[in-house]
Image (cartoon, rainbow, N blue to C red; front, side, top):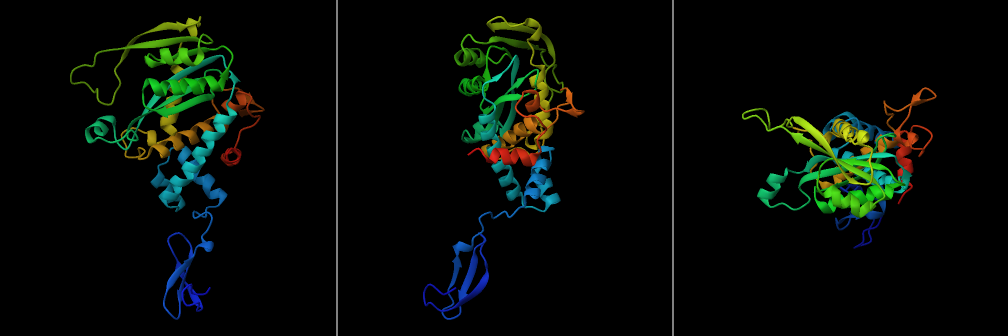
Length: 324
């Protein structure tokens, strides 16, 4: 390599922070870099290492725990997760389209980015901080996550979620949600009169003065259903399956675990972690309540006819990478 100034022969002199080869001129002392030697993938991780990192994250491990066990820097761990999660999100939007459904339940699960909503309001932070609600729609019989949406608990985000749910399903089915008011108008706008829709309203007891009310939910003392559209079967008006799905999310996504400092610091990272989990849940994770095939527990995707076998994480990444 010749010096760009005096054209004298130069010798290698280490690499810069981007991985490009550095040179130093023996005549004028100029230090310069050859950007053509910059590695395409600065992480330089093998496929096996990537799969190991993602499996650890999907089992509820924190980023720093993964860093300690794999000896891969936490920034690389997060970058790997974000890339895989965004690919899974694109893949699921393409793969889960116009699926027949019979009984769908929808619910929201709370999380936060950077800080909680009160702190965000007090400090004047932007909308990329504070409470982050994940809307989830699950098919009761197949346990498939049909659609999800990360946003605020607002009428606009509720409508975006119901639109995603409409694109994921076809035919008439029964839909059950909790008593969140924006669902009423959002479901009607997205589905019209093509669903049998009801809300399950929960009545909570008044917290006792001095009781453990900060982290414990109030006791449910009564429930009643309100039919909003069509003719739903009252015996099937229920949100228990979607609420059980929320437990799985909190158990598997470390950033959703309460009372820790593992919460997400960036909206992009939070969304990618959820997308990765939903892809893994649908295609790779055998569901204990589904019937066996050839002695093997099936996944929600198998039960829905989307695939005929349990996927590995590596296969999920390969299929997701095909969608650009």
